[in-house]
Figure 1 (cartoon, helix red, strand yellow):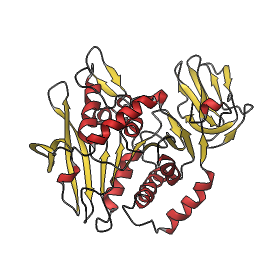
Figure 2 (cartoon, helix red, strand yellow; figure 1 turned 60 degrees about the vertical axis):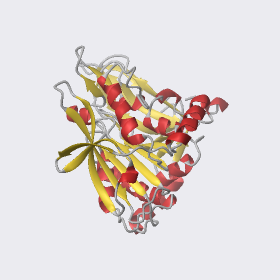
Figure 3 (tube, helix red, strand yellow; figure 1 turned 30 degrees about the vertical axis):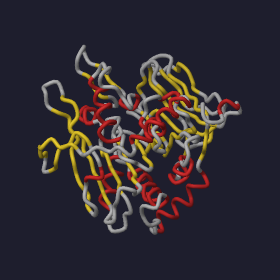
Amino acid sequence: MTKLIKLLSAFASFFLRFSHGNTVYTGDILNGHKVITRLSVDDFPCGEVTKLWLRANNNKIGQAYHVPLLVARGSNCNCDENRFVMNTGLHGDELNGIRVIHRVMKDLDLNLLNGTVVGVPGSNVNGLYEETRGYFNSYDSGSFTNLNRQFPGDITNSSSAGEIFATMLWDAIYNDNGYTAGVDFHTQSTSGSFVNFVYADLTIPYVRNMCDLTGADVIKIDLGDGTLGALENVWDAFGVPAITYELGSPLSWQKDQIQRGYDYVFRQLADIHMYPPPTDPIAIAEYKKNYPNIYYGTETGGASVPTGGFLQTFVKLNEDVTTKTKIASLYNVFGDLITDFYPEFDGRLYSLSTHPLREVGAGTFGVIHNSTDPACRNGC
């Protein structure tokens, strides 16, 4: 993302931040909760958690998709307060972050909360229905839209239902609510796994603080040039410091990863003066253990399989590896060795395939290190 885009977007956000419209209600009630088409957190009562549905575009039989929303406002909320936004589920096979938001919103003591927390526990409802990474567009024999490359979007010029859906999310929830900071929770996609892992642009003020607060295994220093349209990058550009927080494996609820995401949120809230500092001795001890071992890296590398086959891996996530470490081997259907895989540089293993059956072009592993190239200082 170029500096020009960031400057223009930040200039626009200066006006948007102070030009909130009202929450727009449809008049409908779904499963006991009101339905809206636009969120303005100023409209909700202090000292309460409000559950809502955001009505997005219709599916192919004319029924609307409804995105779940939670708005928690402290007992002494006001228009000048700090606000933290949590999103998850932009990829429908990535589920750990959903449980993080559930638990955070359930456990917030509104008498202690100074400000507002917004949670979106499952934004890509289309992908959740299908248990797929992308938003499934059913026309023209079907195609998938990666919602996390579409923000802020443009309904007028969008060519797919998925693009329109992403634009509605941005316009209705993610933009124009005066957020102080934001986190977008993800996991690795189907057939792979991550360590506890963060993407972050450290050129954005305060983002380094957010990374440190995660206590993650690995931080990928990343300007976002390869992921234009990702929610994290667009929040950054619109003046909201943000991180993409990857919590392990897809299509599961991993207790350890969920706990680490949950503990991060309360440290984050304390750091922006929205909540008292954590006092749980187990959480404090775990963070103190993890923090000194955070691996900040600027460059990643990996390998894709040259042909279909069966992959056997020999290493574990978060291990330090060298160019002589055999990461995996690929075999054909008769058990004959096709090729072995080694890293192109020494570093830390942050991603690994978890499915032995690999189609040509499928990934096998990811290694991160700190490049000596000065051009990679802020990520490459």
